[in-house]
Length: 118
Image 1 (tube, helix red, strand yellow):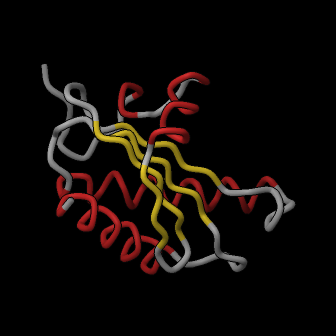
Image 2 (cartoon, rainbow, N blue to C red):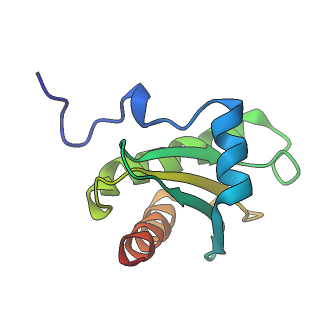
Image 3 (tube, rainbow, N blue to C red):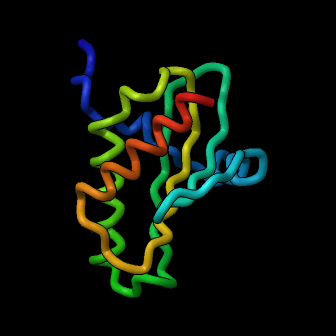
């Protein structure tokens, strides 16, 4: 039984202290309008992502969670833009305002296209 094409199962979530530390240490960084991206390409496995919204700009957890949900949903809808090779991706929201979903989706789409071309 295979998962739906737009599903976001647990094994696509980047977690684990050592894995995250490895991505931050060995990964490549670049920035877009309001996302900072760190990625590391692995030989096997599936693409996994981590979303982060710093408490520095958004003190209330409600706003941080809203932004993380919007970023994850944008990734879920556009993840077919990436090849199925095993990218470990960290998406850190760096904007100071709460962005609406269409602008976040456009930003995530451009980030995924940039990663696919590398």
